[in-house]
Image (tube, rainbow, N blue to C red):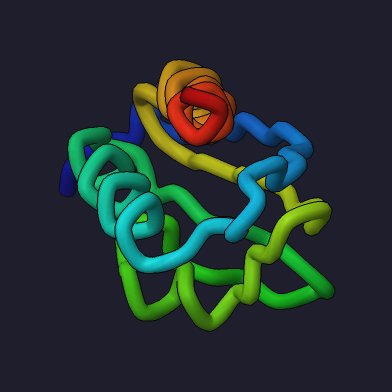
Length: 100
């Protein structure tokens, strides 16, 4: 039997606000899921007491992340803190791209 390392149990959380005018619609949601899949940690979006997989396009769309929505990004695993930080930054980048 393998032993679990303490770093595998790292949990990181961060509140996010959706600022995009169109919310997290199909194109940015697909990019978000692709980026979430690049991490080793399990990553969720928690909204309204429900958990949605951040690595699933369908789950992201089901979360109804319209403009002004708030949710919590939650990750558990070796790179949890980095995952939450980078995905929160990606949401900000979506807003910046929309401005141009």
